[in-house]
Length: 212
Image 1 (cartoon, rainbow, N blue to C red):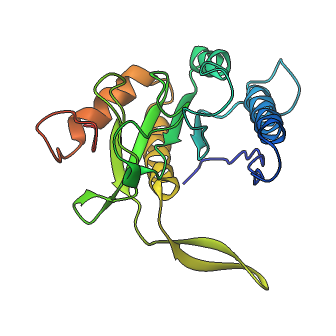
Image 2: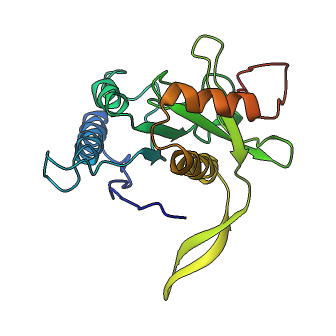
């Protein structure tokens, strides 16, 4: 209830029209803008003497494994977030219909909390599936036909939407409440709280479809 909100508006459509080289250039340009937004989040007011960076950063973006860019492009920025105590929360992605190992980067990074979506009491069919190697996703949250703000013809309105981008903010909001109770709690402690209080789904313990 007492949280503040800082938003970096960076998401944009990337056209697949034209040659492979042109598409590759567009993707790299978009990735560079995302990286700039991640760096801006470290110091939103531009004054290094004030600690105005957010405590939790919710992310609804990612790049597929096949994207023409290094698979560690955002690692240093994520590491800096973690050094400052920022907790990164990422939507797992909506490629679950394509099978296993469909969680995009950097949602598949060990440095973040990755959230998939459930429909009723099971994984939503669109929610991306991880792998035993990367141990993702971490947790699940409701993500099917959630009521939220939408852009309407005459301005903001309400509507129902589905996706892991609807699920991840629920976990981010929960973490904000935990941070409000204990402002000094860190990533590992928060993770243990989520792990110990989650309801196990799917196979016993962690599994690549529903995490913990």
